[in-house]
Amino acid sequence: MRRDELVRWLDDFLAIGDYEDKSLNGLQVEGSDEVTKVAVAVDATLATLEQAADMGADMLITHHGLFWGKVLPIVGPHRRRVEYLLRHEISLYACHIPLDAHREVGNNYGIARLLGLDDLEDFAFHGGRPIGVKGRFPTPMPLRDLADLIERELGESVLVHAGGPLEIATLGIVSGGAAGDVIAAADEGLDAFLTGEPSHALFAEPFERGINALFAGHYMTETIGVKLLAHQLEERFGLATEFVLLPTGL
Image (cartoon, rainbow, N blue to C red; front, side):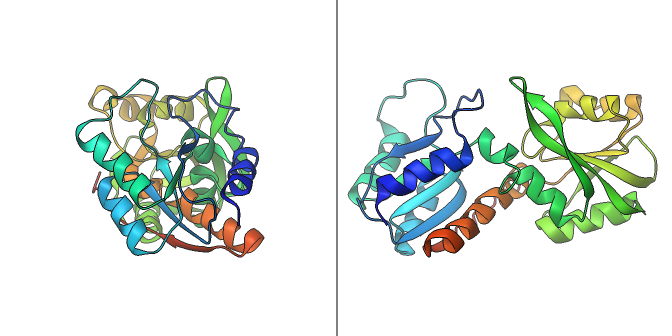
């Protein structure tokens, strides 16, 4: 498949211009004109790039790219990453907040479906647009069982700040570093809120607002979207895809 054709489809499907975002969403580094295999990953680290090359990928799609709203000199580790991509003719495509929010292949809706939530609705806002999702379990479950379910589905130990009810019927989800959205979840009367990583400044909020907060890892909560996107590329275009797993433990 032609690289530029695939990039145009990704830009449109992911609606990369709809969200305010520090990330330079879209094609960040131009590689080979033709794409036959796509690697997907959370982070654009040098180790990720090396694994993508070993997999024979012509394009790497990541949630976290190389450029974050300011000019960076091409020196040190940044130079080595860019140089590696160019030398191996691997295109780098990044999609940050639009991939968190996407209703088909997004991290948040994807997690909600993995956990079996019903009645899914948009939840929490970024730049005036919805980014997360909330839903209801068909049958309420104990908080401990919910934590165990999340651990099984996402593969990361779950930290629980048990400030709310011990039976969970409703859950809000915003992946990654969204600890502050526990306030929105409490304001909406949800039983629990799931995100990636905690914040010291927000530690007391779940306890004082009567809601449970669950933290399942910034990295692991953001593996879902790129995997779902890879499946779309396989189904729509017959492209070979492969996921690069390099967890940070955070």
